[in-house]
Length: 479
Image (cartoon, rainbow, N blue to C red; front, side):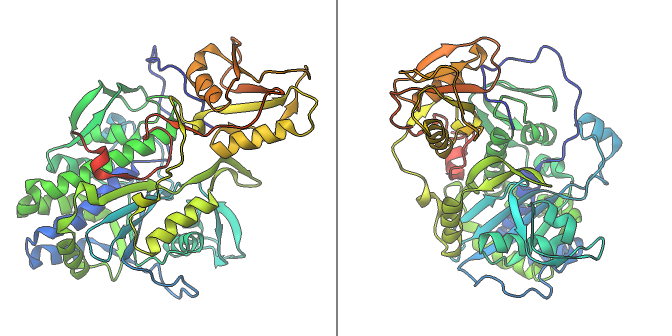
């Protein structure tokens, strides 16, 4: 599990790159969505019809039964696969894309287009999500499997697009209308065709793994820089959580660029963009030129304010499953609310959490905590641990008794290097004493005293930091 945030420090020397299986999902996703949006310009039936020849076909809905009831609007399952076969050795070295392709999914999202074709809602499904497959036949071994738990991205390896669709529908109860699959392609060229994409950052972003080095401010990224931006996960201690938010920012900016730039009215640029993308796209047979034209024309009114982005709410990170490892467990209540909104074709932004919370510098999802009971009150440690976990803190879920059992005032022990995390944790424990303990490391300790009454809800001051709220394209757009 990721280390809690501490004060950022620029690395003293570059570290050797490591193999990464999580790839540039936002780039590929945004690229595919942009091709759909570009059709809105009404450039001409002949040009758009020609796209059919570049799209490979797959049948993800074959013999599927007991599917969810159709909702309102259109739902597209957009899947990014880790295929690097077409990347040159020079590009691999330049952008640090080492390692062999695993032919698995590295991203998955549901793209919902409203029935009035004036809103796009994008819901990311983390690849490490805890999932349960329906019964199926393994496409590699031919063996028949009963329903069993897996990580979501493993559904593709076991049963290809069909099992992937079945698993997503089983988990979300959302009927998928179309399937689009994109592998590791020339998305950098697409960004360059658009003339770059503008992004904003409030803090400097430096990552020795990807080579990213951006000062605070507004930047127009070309294809290579955009690749570094969406892949970076070592710019701060937020790790994958921060990266997912940056990817959503980039996707929103790219869609805005595609819908507002001259490329929509330039047949040559449209052709270049489509050529840079569709050679590595697979889709269901119904998602053809006619669908692109109809959908594209309907999306002409799409704006940053009418596009919204979120990730399925996570209830527990580091959820250990025997034989599978560490997974992400969805929040049953909040995720059900999210997918109900998709089925009913309602804006997701209406479902933002509005409860009164205290704003802190570090999101609780990034703070690891060990709870000890410093009193003789039976079950106090378990009660404190559960309350902190419910608020989002990453507790060990194994509270223990402290050596001293007469603690009156609750204490937070912390390594000074993680002082921001300690302050955020103390904010959730009104009246707690902050006590530095050099060398303690990233796991903070709470010794519950007799003064404990309740855990106060806290949330990151920066709504983009490590949390899974809904944002619109307008909210993340520069300016």
